Image (cartoon, rainbow, N blue to C red; front, side, top):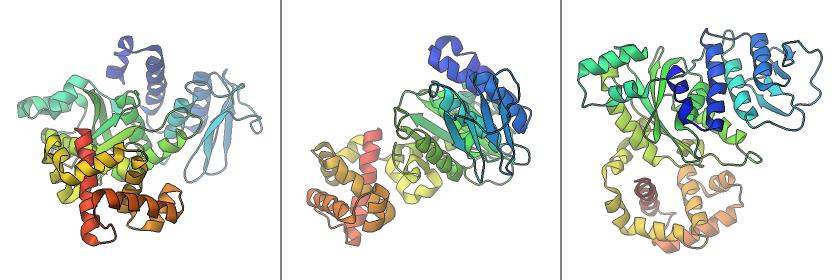
Length: 378
């Protein structure tokens, strides 16, 4: 966290407070798994209100801000987060939730999931200059290797790079740290902002399994936490690069950014988090210029439909239909009656001139949808 904390003077008060919350839990997690009693007492002091936790085995801990243990069950829970497979953490604040309670609970839950016997990893914010050096293929291999050592990354074990973007105005680095911590896969993780994006170096501790699954689960949890009453929707997008030798992290970074262009903010978790390896031949579309993609007649027709009255609803229905492969499953995903989805798809068919029930028409529509998204992403 040190590199991120050094930037506090350039952040506004809210961002600085958010960094301090994360730094608090990073410090707790730096020594490994956190005892639930220590976690709850620490959180109560940080939040300046009573806090509590219930573990999977049914044990409960509650503490006041002054560190005194509280007996019994909570009288009023202002906000809480459920743990898997069982348990929860909560705050007991009078007068409703505080401005940073959601962030405090998010990190309290992360720490609880990393409790004794649970494993997991605590991502660390890193020096952006070192991360940029590692990602630059223009730099000498020796310089990249030295930067990796300074970052605490093993120089020979494979790693992959994850790219994170957030259009809501949130700090992409903070979002990346949160998502990767929620994912919980044992790994060495170093995160830094690189331009408008966050770059995360993820070096698995055993096996090369992609973190995409854990990130999708984390993105789903985050979306539910941002649902009604929070004031903003989820605008995060994540691209996952392939596994490479550490000195060739720039290759994985390029793949992560290409995958990021396919990601859709606010979509389903499979659309929010895109793994380059899962794209297959579709990844080749990212090599076509945005101008050329926009000029393709099918893409142009889709763009015109999206900009027209009610057209965005048709594009949303098309995306759900392509994703699920079924009218009824698409209706379930959109929380609509299947007849409503059918009516929207009919509008799309009229605009594109392709029959979506025919394999050729559906394939062209899928490609046009991907190409339209890529052209919009730049």
